[in-house]
Image 1 (cartoon, rainbow, N blue to C red):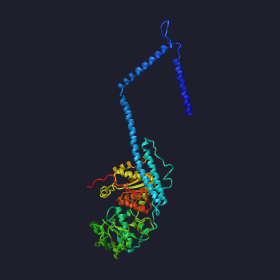
Image 2: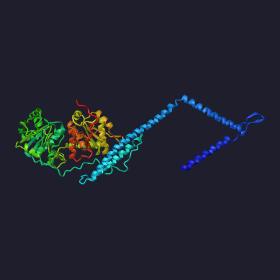
Image 3: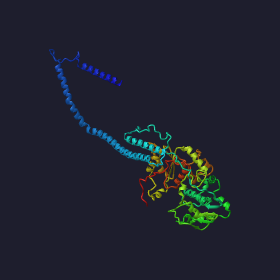
Image 4: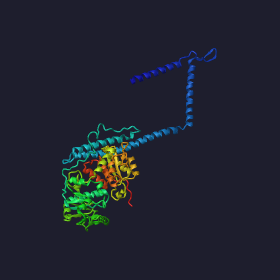
Length: 549
């Protein structure tokens, strides 16, 4: 149809042209007969042709003159050179983008080659532990990388709102039932554990003095292990010399998990001992830099609450700066005693059967997922917050900043990352998990979190970063804390943050932070750990590090 229409148009044009020529060249009945006289007729064709010929010459003469005048009155050179220059700039810009894209694509192709070679080598390994799921994950990663390469090569040609991005060609990594950020398959059947069967009249007095709450919780977990080895009931420290653990932990939960009384509060201990509040034997696990890693102030605080202390002594030479790997047998041989009440000091840095601690559920045999977990009030409040703001599919980030710049820069490599680099690392995890929102647990200033929010962009879409909002009476997710008058407590809020992070689909932590380590412990024990869990910018060094003082 288009061809016939075109032919018809050409025929019409030809007919119109012929018709006009016939009209122009046909003599008019009233054409001016050039009369010089009555007897002189100049209507012959030759004179008319000469006149027509001369008109062509006149046109040929005046055309160059007109062009010369136009040239001198108009800056033709600049007019055309400007247009040509802008055209060349467009082509030059496109060429630069093409070169950059090609170099980036070559780099990605090299990565893909290495990845495929790794898969090939694993296929010929006779005793490979790789499962079919691992192979599937590897192949999907290569397909995803191939898509990224195609998009990089197409990027110079994208303009405006139009996008030439390569689609998934029917491969839906989320909808296909395969989750690259699926939960870690925890092996719990072959756990190495110890039974905790304490003698009701033998006590281990817990002392934790170093660091913040997270350090104290790790110290408390290790005290439980020591108490199990030594067959003693663990005494939780008084809130007058330590944190108020009853606000953040459920002590009865520990006893319920064991099915017997293994942990008591300081008040219960006082009732049992009546007026005899005494530590009979002070075995110091650490001898350096100070015995039991305690200062005189902490000993005075114990005395002020009516607890008398024995002389601080250590059965071995142990330094917190270089702790030695110890075994259950080492503890039994050095810390066993007939004394009713013993203390071993702060054991946060102790290394005793670390392989047992990294198991899901920890080193003690019990019927629960974990022994040390947030109180029921905090657990329900975290669940209500998640239901209100986040939903099941969210990433949680512990982004430690306050006081961490100097701490990290004293390490090699540093663990303090510039905001733009941190944003890129977060975005790469978002790309893997495809999660729509991020929960941010941080002590960073608003200037830092504001910049971070503006830079976390995936596929042109900003990913919202949510922090716990200030109390609002119109919101009911935190009603339990308010009703039990524990809202606003800094330790309760910290434990609430930990709980929300531990319940996330994917978690990004801060290397070197015990707050992060406690979250990872909960995720391990609750079986919520993901294959995509990692430390922020794991495997990378900061792209800029300041000098030390």
